[in-house]
Amino acid sequence: LLMAFRYYTPQLRRITHRDLVDAGLLTAEEEGLINKGFYAASSVLESWLADWIEQHLHGESKYQAFGALREYRAALASVGTWLDIRAPVSFETLLYVVVYALVFIIPFGPTHISWTDREAVMKAA
Image (cartoon, rainbow, N blue to C red; front, side, top):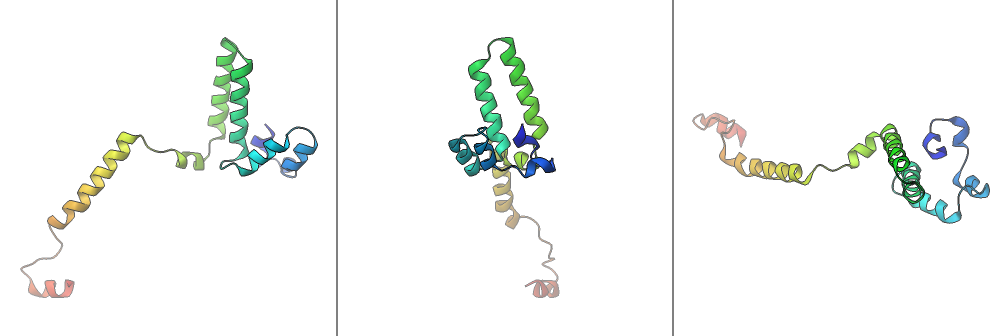
């Protein structure tokens, strides 16, 4: 939870990953994983929590814990996370087809130039 609230609490901002290793809360290997991660450390924390829940809880408590983890993830979601989510393949394919069709059809459509007005054609060229 330290990683989740680190950017919101001034006292926690001063704590570095090296401090956590020195305190025994992280291993050097975990520090390396956090530092080279593409996303924020909170996503690594979520992964560890999910792994721990999967290994240590059973039955209804497991479902409850995953529900709480899902709510935690939704509460910490940011705009960057939403930007990384891709559209479904069907929508993406439809979008590509429509754009390419539009690009292909535009030259054959009506133009903004009146071809009967010779002066307008000369100015547009």
